Image (cartoon, rainbow, N blue to C red; front, side):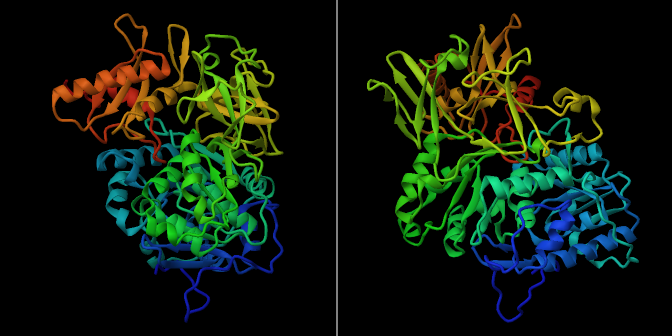
Length: 611
C-alpha cells in the first residue's frame, strides 16, 4: 500500500461507502480546492483495485484533503510559485491523485502526462514526454517508481526544481511553506489533448470552467442520486478519465472505484466484476471498451455478473459504433443490463470535457442518413434522405428498407449510415452548426460544430496563434467536428480534418475503415483511411492496413479483397498499402491517429510491405 493511502479502519480494509449523510452539492464551488474541502466533511472517497480485482489503496476525501495539503505545503517550501507547472505521470494510483490535488493547494498547475502504453517504443515515449514538458515549461516532474528511468531521460538537461518519484518527494526534508488559495479565474491545470503529438498544445482550464463542467455533468448530465457509485478504468491523462471520473466525483461527492487502464486491457471483465461487486451505477467508456467485454466474456464469467444496478452506461471519447453497442446490450441482457442505460455523449478537452448528454432512460437513438448527403453528391434538403431509428430499432422507415449490415442500411441503390444522437447540450452552452461561410445552419443541415460556454478553455497555453485559430474573441470555439442538430439533439459524424475529398466527393474515413473491418481476420484498429497526394498532386484515397500475412501471394489476394470490399460498401476506389503489425500510430488515449499515420507514411517512417 502506498504512502498516500490513509485508511480510517485499520482492522478491515473496505472501500469507501456509496452513501453519505453529507448533503450533496452539485459542483457549486468557486474552485476545486473548495470542492475537496467540502467532500472531506463526508465519508466517501476513491478506491484503487488490482488487475485481479483486489482492493488496494483506499482514500476517503478527508484523507485525500489532508495528504494534498501536506504536499502543497512542501511544494511552497521548495520554492514553487503560483502558476508554475509540474509534470505528473498519470498512473492510476492514489499518489497521482494526492499530488494533483496537492498542486491545487499550492496554486501550481499539475500537467498530467501519459504512460508509455500507447506509444510504439521507448524512444518515442521519451521524446513525447520531453516535448510536452518543454511546451508547458515544467519546473518539476514526478511519477511512479516504474517510470523513474523514463522520467530522468526525458528531463535530462532541463532546469527543474525536482525530478523523481512520488516516494522520493515524500522523503524530502524541507521547510513547509504557507498554502495559498486559488481564485475562480485562476488556471487549475493544463490538459494535453489526445491529438497533441509533434506540436503539443496544453489546454488551459480555469477553476471556473472546471466547476461549471463538473456541475453540468452531475446535475444535468447523469443527474446524480444518493446511491450512485462510479466505476472507471479510464486513464487520468485523458480528459474523460481525469475530469469525468475523478474531478467530477470530487466536486459532486461520489465514491469511485478505479481499475488501471493497463489492467483493464489485460483483464477487461474486471470492469464488469467491479460493477457487480460494488453495485456500480455509473461508468463511461469509448466504444471499444464495450466491444472487448462482449468478445471476451465466457459462460462462467457471465453467471457471476449482476449488472442490474447499472444506471448510466456512458459512451464517448470517439465515434460511436451502433453495431458494437447493440452487441454489448444483447450479450449482457441476461446479466441484468438494460440497453436503456446507454448514454451517448459528446465532449472535448477544449471544453474541459462534456458538451452534451443523451436523455437518460432512452438508450441509443439513431438517425439513418443518406450517404449521398454525407459525400456532398446531393443537397441537404433532406426529409427524403434522413430516416429515424429509436433505441437501435429501425422505425418510421419505408417497409422495403432493410439492414444490409450492422451500420449500413440500403433502399434499392441508396445506402444510409447510422448516426448516433449524442444528446442535448448542457444548459451552459450555446451550440451552432455552421457552414463554410460561418453562417448558422438550420436543423438537419450538416456543418461544423461551434460551442460557447463557461467550460470552454481560455486557450492553448503560451500559444496565442493556435488559440486564435479555433477560439474567437467573443468566446466561440471551433471544435473541428462535423455534425447536425435534430429536435435539439446533436449528431456528430466525424472530424473535419480527417475527411477525404476525392473528385469533389466527401468520404468519411470511419466508413472506409469499417468496410475493411468486415473482412474475416481484420481487426478494429488495423486500418487507417487517409488521403495522399498523387502524381499530379491530386488527392488519392489510401488505406493503410496492418498485415500479418507472410507470403507475397497471400498479401496480393488480401489487397484485391480489400479493394472489392471498399468499392462494394463505400463506393470508392482506394490505393491499398500493407504495413507491418503494430505500425499505425496512436494518440495518448489509444485512438488511431490518422494525421500522424499520414505524416509517417509520407516521411517513410511507416514502410509498406512488398506484395
